[in-house]
Length: 282
Image (cartoon, rainbow, N blue to C red; front, top):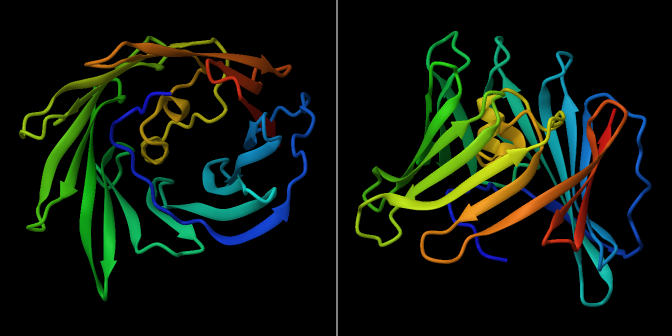
């Protein structure tokens, strides 16, 4: 599998580690739940282990307010190491996400969201801060640009330099279809380290006509999801093409099983057919 480069921000927050004896973990598919997304479970078929689980919590307005993650790692002695963590999304009186925090709080970084105005739902920037004693310093920031349809068409990244300034390091351009699905993402990066941002990896996507249960029309969640159409498009990806600047292109194809209301309950992909993803609903 080729390494897909680009701006990916990850706050490490997993803790509460323990080891368990390994047992086959894959439950049967539940097909009659049609409510909000409850959890997404990724299974390794060769190891018969649910290696990653994301569980979703919601507030009274059915907005995501917490995502709890459980990671399982198969050890050489046939035990399973379990790592737990949780991300909480704090909202203001208008329902906008303004802060992203982790439980347990083992990281020295946090994220603040700023909007275009006191009443706007358009995210102006998301800035990551590093705690240093009683103060904090911005270590990187993502700036958002919208089109007339209120869709994000560009995300721009600035990273902390040795002189404590933030420098432009990369940006991405997004293209949409008529239904609001992201059909192209073009990365611009300084791959030659010469200070010039040039077109780099380009993704294109095709979709089904079903409901994507991970989609929420919220730029802060789009940022948390690494600016990826898995959380940024209302339909489910069925084909992803990766256009590499200096090597042959490749692609990933996805297939789904759906429940009675057209939501996915199982996902497979080719050529990475050694895993399976299952969706569960409240």
